[in-house]
Image 1 (cartoon, rainbow, N blue to C red):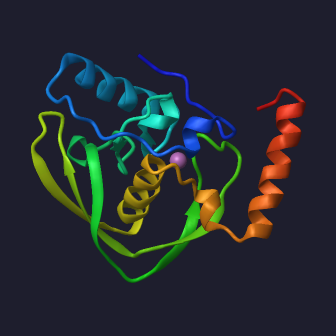
Image 2: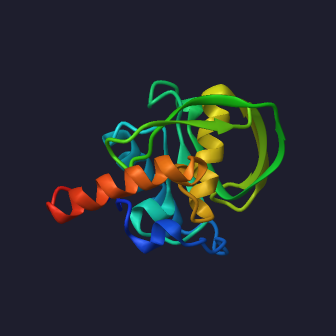
Length: 170
Ligand code: NI
């Protein structure tokens, strides 16, 4: 089922998520399926649970946009354990549609996470995958890509969004 994506302004997007403690449940599997479906429908490469109004440490990523089944990643309670280098590149967010900005990220990261069964695993990535991992894990801590911009740029975008909200276009 395609779920509604929460937009910037909703407090859940800026609230730290609780760890997932119940694994291997049909609810969790359904949630993961729905998140992939929602992400593909919105043409995103990552989606975090708070974006569908669920305050849990769960995110899905697919940098192949559905082309490569092996690229499907489900990360539960993920933590960045190593990071290296720097990259600057354009970033957007399904919860902040219409806005894209250059964001500085680590070039390479290693993440420790759990799968739907609760098994721990590690994933490493660079380039787009590294960016997606950092962006989605940020979401689980209530951090948006806007928080990585200069205060001036952030304020400019906030004002534009406020106008859109007032006009009922957000
Ligand atoms: Ni996002």
